Image (tube, rainbow, N blue to C red):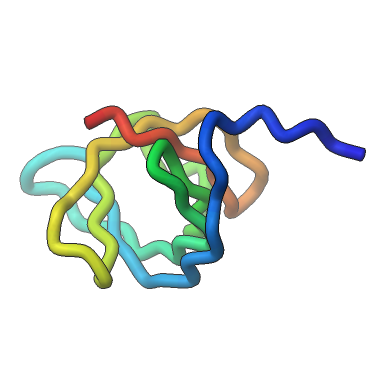
Length: 83
């Protein structure tokens, strides 16, 4: 059995989002699989193309969130919200 090391409980989200590394760069589309107050699990087409820090905008929410990647497994990434 895997130990849950998350600080907050995650709920299924299954929402479309996009991330932007810096102002003026092209957005990268993503799928948000699950999310909590402190982070989320996202999936992108190319996990290695995603920088270590970026701004995530989820279509269901108006407020963009600053994020940092904490793990990578192929196309899926675990992120924490930094602001």
